[in-house]
Amino acid sequence: MVIENNKLADIYDLAKQRDPHKPEFHQALSELLISLQPVIEKNPELCTRDILERLIEPERLIQFRVAWRDRNCETRVNRGYRVQFNSAIGPYKGGLRFHPSVNSSVIKFLGFEQTFKNSLTGLPLGSAKGGSDFSPRGKTDDEIMSFCQSFMSELFRHIGASTDIPAGDIGVGNREIGYLYGEYCRLMNISEGTMTGKGVFAGGSMMRTEATGYGLCYFAEEMLTRLRNTSLKDKKVVVSGSGNVAIYAIEKAQEFGAKVLTASDSGGYIIDEEGIDLPLLKQIKEKERLRIKEYVVRKPSAVYYEGCEGIWSVPCDVVMPCATQNEINKQDMEILLRNGAIALLEGSNMSCTYDAVKMISQEDILYVPSKAANAGGVAVSGLEMSQNAGHIFWSRDRVDKMLQDIMRNIFDNCMKASEEYGHAGNLLMGANIAGYIKVAKAMKWQGVI
Ligand code: NDP
Ligand code: 2IT
Image (tube, rainbow, N blue to C red; front, top):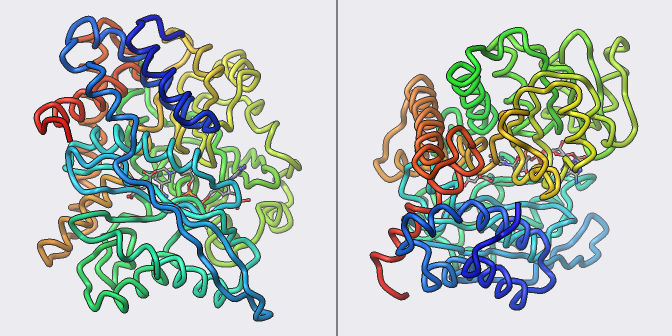
């Protein structure tokens, strides 16, 4: 996997020159460019320097100070970001991440990836991402509220229901969205759904909480049925993370009849050979906000391992990383392949390192990049926007059916693109190409802006 084409290599070099200290962004860009080699041959008009050079440059990047008071009335200062990446196909849309590892490279790679993910949903959604190096872990509710209000006291001037619609991501769940959205409504004297992931009692959509994890499993089920004549039933699944995406991936995988063996947080991972006890996991993580090692205190038949490294050596059929970027490296991938995993779907954004992705060949494992596999979350965010704009509320069944249709369409479109461009069945190529072409066409059509 190297960028052979000179024009594409030039774009990569340009991005590195402009942003020498953004490794995650370089990684996301190189994975996209490699997939564009067949596009440049077949449709050179969609891969011109004019389009690519604009595509890699965010339309707007906002960085701001977030000052707030902790429980001891000490002033704390964090850094806030919003990157409004691309609006060629719709208003800026993407989540907010609160985690100490957030920096401009992480935000930029996430915003870039969101461009193609949002395109794949088939909905009119542009791309954005944002967040802060603030860590919600160990903070009181009052501290979280104070931080969120301060964060929004700058962000509010840059967002709007038809301009930019933030949502959640790592460290930003229903609680944080509530504080952020409450402050937005107060400052703007307006309540028109400028954020998604809202409580269902306050303009939110049914199924938004479950959407990313469920969507991941809908994609898995469709892919296993169509490409391997099998299903999730009776499969052993390894899931990492124990947050929003992981919990609802576990729930739907279990509904499909799979046995999920693991869950983790940044401290370590658990193996439960009987299959994860989901009510217990929800109690510990969603209600009590405790660490994952608490699981083995309450279910002594499970085992806890300190550190996350070993989780990929648990033998399984299906792999669903749902924690963070680059959580699977080359050595992990070697072990997964050696242990005979048949499918890997990225629940977290860019779960695999570049070297790990390079190792995969289609025969080994069905690999689905995050921009396709985890698009269910932003897709239901899009449905939340539609409901807010129409002042209506759809039933759970209706939203669920739409989510299933969207995930099936994404699978179909990735397959179609992979066939059309000479890499039949390669879902990495298919996702990148299908996601890219729509944005490139829109940018070309709108002229140089
Ligand atoms: P949550 O904050 O709900 O959960 C994140 C989980 O991952 C926690 O268990 C956390 O453990 C763990 N984690 C975070 N950082 C690390 C790390 N550096 N090393 C090991 N474990 C870590 O976030 P989400 O579930 O919402 O997000 C998970 C992934 O899914 C992210 O990549 C996100 O971008 C992606 N995603 C989320 C969507 C959504 O709708 N929420 C939509 C599409 C993608 P700990 O508590 O110890 O930090
Ligand atoms: O990475 C993602 O797609 C998200 N965090 C969800 C974004 C959204 O706007 O719902």
